[in-house]
Length: 129
Image (cartoon, rainbow, N blue to C red; front, top):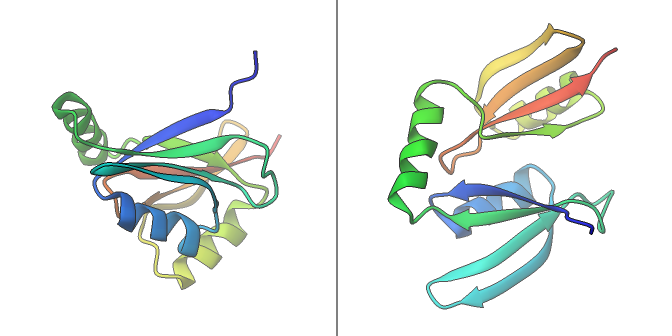
């Protein structure tokens, strides 16, 4: 069995799709309208058959509460592995991305945390060991 979907709850799918594609650089794999919402999945342009990131509408009250609690407490919803955190930090800062934690090292990794403008903190991580 091969599973390759990860999801992020978002408060606005249109805004999230724009941010994740135009700012972060993901590529749209699926964007299927399903009434009020859409089934939107994105992929890394370097791995078009790799893990898909689903932009899930945050309509369920318990999920919305979890998302708000994580953001308030400074805990990332998920993380994206990158080859060079410093380079991504510089690129995304120039694109106007708001970081709540600049690059730092701990336990064999370097990481930084940013706000995805859709209700989530996202961690970039580079394994350094």
